[in-house]
Image (cartoon, rainbow, N blue to C red):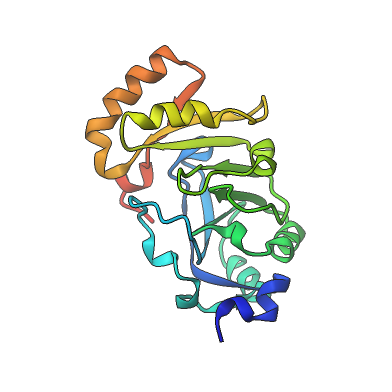
Length: 210
């Protein structure tokens, strides 16, 4: 049976969890803050520079009940839970977010924005992808727009992605890790001329933590 046929997955009572771990947020607005990461399997965007390609096939990751997810989380002093992927909005996140809300943690989402919203979040980080661009609903709810810069054309893509974003959103440019030495100087030049943008670095990789 394919994972998509599972009734508990459709209802949101189970999710294909690739991994869960307590670490420090390495990117964006909350960089440096201790966070519990819940990585949900499944993604059909297929970015060539993705550093978690093993998350793409949801059938490779066992379904875990929301009850078990919460029980595991309670072993750590986490105040922030980051739901990431893969692409977590492929799945119904209503039950998970309801139970996370019941234990009083901040709920953050990292998404490409290609799928309709489910769940309730305190912070939404949108990282849009060219192959499957974000929908209007997600853009309007975004708190943090983070665009990955792998080549010079990505700057125009980043500017274009600001359309439809709410006025309170923070704007970040982040060099693709394997090209950071080449692209970071270009990002620095860009933000100096466009100060509404902020540089985001993958500091967890510099610190050698998950």
